[in-house]
Image 1 (spheres, one colour):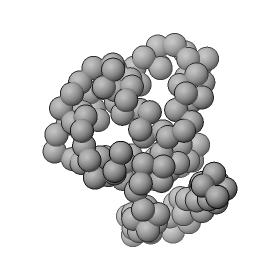
Image 2 (cartoon, helix red, strand yellow):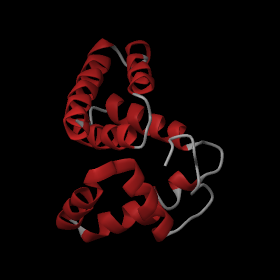
Image 3 (cartoon, one colour):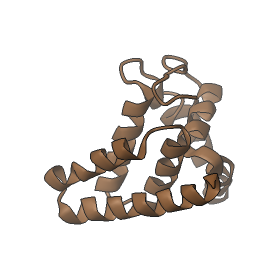
Length: 135
C-alpha cells in the first residue's frame, strides 16, 4: 500500500488496529505481536485496540505523517528497538529513506546531536538489513 494512502483513517476497533499495526511493523509484525503476548497478553490486545485501533485512527494525519510522529517520538526517547521496528515498517511500506533521514536529522535542532546521531545510526542499520532482503 502506498505510504500516502490513509485507507484506514476513521475506522476504529481491533480489526482496523491490527491492520494498522501490521502495516507499521512490516514483515516482523507477527514476531513482534508474539513477543508482546509473551510479555503480557493484555499488552498485545491494547496495542491493537487502543494504540492502532483508536490513536492511529484519526482523520487529520495521513499515514506518512503518523509514522513520522511515531519515529521522532521513539528516537527522542531512545527507544531504539521500537524505532527499528517502525523504520522497517516505514521502508517496507514505501516511505522513502530520504524522507526518514531528513526527519531524523531535524532531531539535531530539537533533541540534540546525540539523539540525532543515534537515530540516524539505527536508520543506517535498518536500511542495510532491508537492502539484503530486497536484493
